[in-house]
Image 1 (cartoon, rainbow, N blue to C red):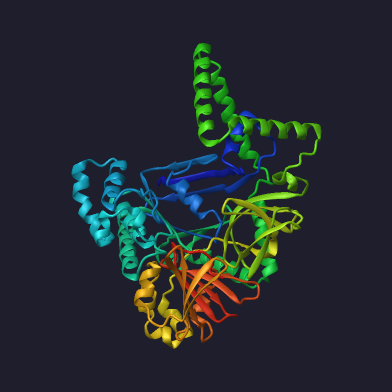
Image 2 (image 1 turned 180 degrees about the vertical axis):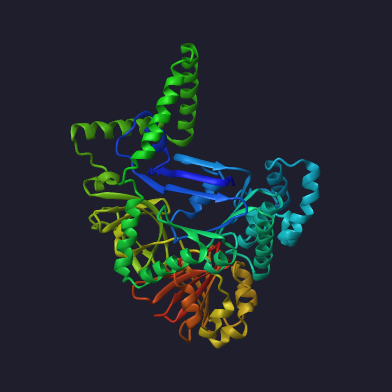
Length: 547
């Protein structure tokens, strides 16, 4: 009888959400009931056999990356069981690479971690360097690499360590077409040699090309698992249904799904298993020598206190603060604390990435939205901590916590799309089209160099702490921050090309009035303002909203 290569049985991955790092240690001493949990993956069961290629699909936040980490044994499950027969290797953008080491040093380190001796490393190192094809950057620290170069190096190392099970998580979403084809050829070689492959991608054409079966993840659960064509067709039907919803209906649907992941539903079977395991452990510990238990307790306390002093600036104050909170709750007292004033409202923890989807969003210090303290612009990234009273989001940005109306935020993780500057040229001014490579060459450079080499500068101005250098005759403006050119704004003279608009569906942030668009490629991030007829282009790793 054929034995499965990978078996998942009722696997749950649960995270407890804390507001601050210090809360984790405080919770150890003074546990508080009602912690808010988030189920990234829940009750997932499947079997995969040797030689199979499994495609994994799902919208953002569906649990695909968590599943890939569980498959690669990067994180353990909270409950349930995982059986893997063989060595796994996870391929994701820059996963496992040390930013401080050079590419060569990372190759040696990763190979040593896979148990290779120096002779074997010496043999395969040239093969990895040739496959990665990043030139002299192989001797440079990884922190200087672009996302495409990181992906090249990570992929090259992983496929040359000869794993039994390959987990590819969106690693082909960056990089050029030639490298993509090289990767697909290598994956096909693995497939032909009988390796087991898990392929995670938003590209249904890639999934269809490689997969024997497809697993559809939907908000942490397995929605469908079966024959490739059938599951992809069902997924397409869902995407079509979702895209036909109004913006309000989309938000309501996502909100309901996120609430389901936020610990409001019990997992009785898994919790019973966990309790049984804990009880068995307790029985075993009772047989331990009492003197040894005392020694172990003292050492544990010393370790915890040392960690506590490292993480918490004033641990005594933190403990007193926590104790006072518990005392007030017990006595029914009212504590005047701005951070806790929203406790009287119904609150659902999310801890999700989000973006501002309006031109300008007011942010307030209180849940009632009466004490405004700043504004955020379209496409500014925020962390959505919770929904409060069904109409307000609690958000965090730049280590500041505030509140804003739900309609101002779209919960989404903006992912890269395979789009080039050339595809956008038809909508841009003729003056930019003629020399766009020259204009883009100044991005990331110094302001002084721009002024020395660029002719036609008509004015310099500062708007909302952003310095702008204007080429009035060309309708081009450079954005400067701290002496570096971090963006270029170009006049839009035509509508968004139909094929580009179609490509951007599901991979862009669009304002409620559809006048503002934000999307990104592996190299650039784009802000399109159809009201002002302008497009701002910035490097992907040097971005901040240019609205």
